[in-house]
Amino acid sequence: MSLRTLMFALGLVTLAPAGLVMSATASPPEAFTLAPLPYATDALEPVIDQKTMEIHHDKHHAAYVKNLNQAVAADPALQGQSLEALLANASRLPAAVRNNGGGHYNHSLFWTLMAPVGQGGEPSAALRARIDQDFGSWDKFVTAFEEAGLKRFGSGWAWLVWSDGRLQVISTPNQDNPLMDLAEVKGAPILANDVWEHAYYLKHQNKRGDYLKGWWQVVNWERVNALFAAAAQ
Ligand code: MN3
Image 1 (cartoon, rainbow, N blue to C red):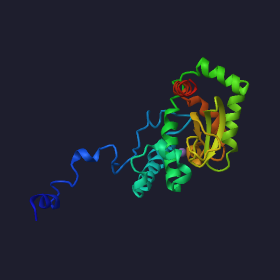
Image 2 (image 1 turned 30 degrees about the vertical axis):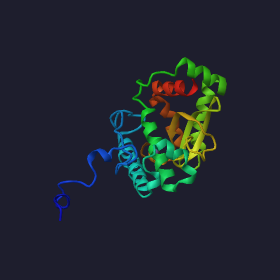
Image 3 (image 1 turned 135 degrees about the vertical axis):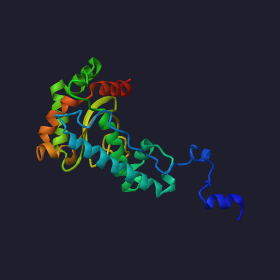
Image 4 (image 1 turned 90 degrees about the vertical axis):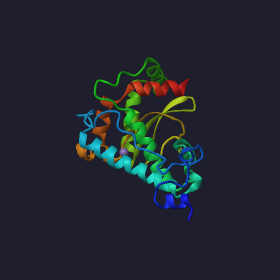
């Protein structure tokens, strides 16, 4: 037994030099990580209650990350790819990558689209003008977005997306999103709301419409304005 083999057996050295582990082509054991919420779990009260935020982020989102990492770890061909690259190939990947990759992307975006009541700013003049142009009025946009969430049967998401040179309201089932190659409408997400029951059930039970109407109070328009400006330039 060589000295290095002995040291390895004793756990004193690892097989790969530390520098190799972080190389561009190697995938670390945990490729994707759960970022903390950008605010406290009670910050969106009373619109979204603290318990819902705790379970939603610490349990549901955490599970998507864990299961995505497991699915990627099981297939060397998937390793080292960005989340966006995986989603763009969703139709050809295992369902676990589509569902958990979508879940990770959607929730990571969703948390940043919200802010405490009164702290989310206002829609920019540019966004308002484009909403008027593409929907007829602000109120028609709000109605279309709420209906997209309300009419999504089962679980899914309501979206405002920049697609084909205009703003469109769509909905997707489950954890699908408009970055996926299989999406009916592909584009850049500008605004998204989670209409899975786990997003609202503790407070609103079966009344998804109440959740959708109240949710506007916690939209982070500063973030939405920035996403619109980047997509529509
Ligand atoms: Mn959710």
